[in-house]
Length: 304
View 1 (cartoon, rainbow, N blue to C red):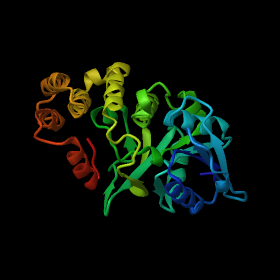
View 2 (view 1 turned 90 degrees about the vertical axis):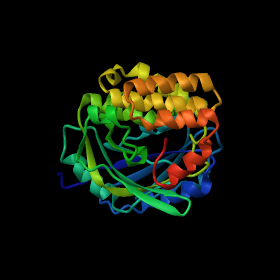
View 3 (view 1 turned 120 degrees about the horizontal axis):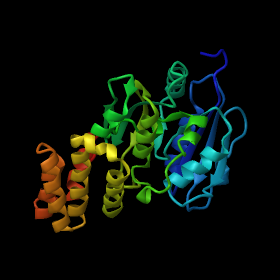
């Protein structure tokens, strides 16, 4: 590890969450990290709050999204403008624990072959919190094809900037930016293993105002996009069944019963044990409300 720690730029895309945003920025500026830390707050589709800007050794720069509207474009606006060796992501409703960068950056520097380091998260929903962290030090493409590994949250990402640029940054073509972090994980893992710190170093707030809660049509379109974009799912039947089960559930939640039945049947053929297929059937039949299930899962640190 070098004697001088590299500078880190943290990109925070934001829209209509002023109080949560300040919590996120304060946590970034409070990092127990010996290197320089700069925060780029990128407003997407709303007027920027210039009072957030700060000078000094933990500066905050306020920007507006100059690329395609949406989460991916906002992230890329910051990535292009930052000049540091490392770039990290933090969503505007999340908060880093004080030791996050101080733990992750040394792990990344000790693994020169990898572009990205991740870590675990604490999910906060209403009055509950659940810790989720992957057990291993490394994450492979096969791991990510089998399972989304939701604990590898975008707010945990710390990238080598040059390698992130080489990957093409965040894909702005993912429908509605849904799963853009999963797409980035998959593309990174295609190039090599991802370093993981198997401990909790951030708090992720799941709430009813989250960007993708109940946006079933966008979710379904994006999930179909993943199956088309990644032929590798053909070798990962459980992973493909997971996604087709999610499509079935999203279709059922929209009231598209025939599509839900078709995708549920497709899911069961791939993996008879995939629970999402049966949950989709329950929603399609009217026996289960999708919002009720989603709230239950979120209280336990899970999602559909």
